[in-house]
Length: 185
Image 1 (cartoon, rainbow, N blue to C red):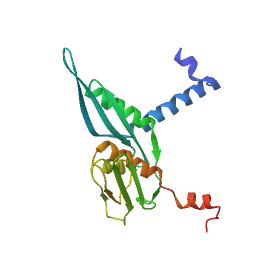
Image 2 (cartoon, rainbow, N blue to C red; image 1 turned 45 degrees about the vertical axis):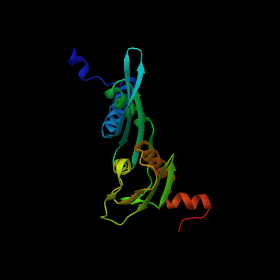
Image 3 (tube, rainbow, N blue to C red; image 1 turned 30 degrees about the vertical axis):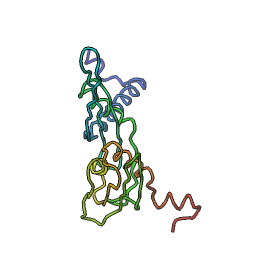
Image 4 (cartoon, one colour; image 1 turned 90 degrees about the vertical axis):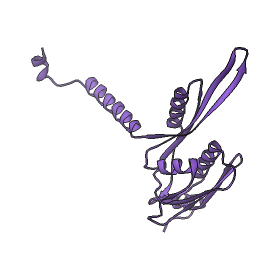
């Protein structure tokens, strides 16, 4: 039977189905290229009649080292489930990072809750000079040269969320000129 089908041309439906399967496989492969880092895991306990009930929350950062990064905050009764949920949420909320070579486009400050951060572009070869959760976000975004400082609270969740707010505030030169209505030189 295989010999009979060997010489026959495939129909357009079979080709389109094969193309869709190939595209789906390629999309799964691109998701596999994402690196996932757990920034912190918090344990909560609730005292009940029979003892204590523990629950976990995990802050997860996901990035492709090529200008895309996302964060997720997963909560569950088991540690592994919280990390898995955080990773899923981070993949859903990916955002693009405007970059100028291996650094960011301009200095930016942002705050979230009590955390206030400042991120500055750096010259080539400087590396990522940042602490705590900021380092994870910036490295997974693919930024190789940057100076960053956490100025407010040290809560890892708020520092990471402030870093994401700072990334959202970044603009490229073309975006700024377009907003002003000026043609690029």
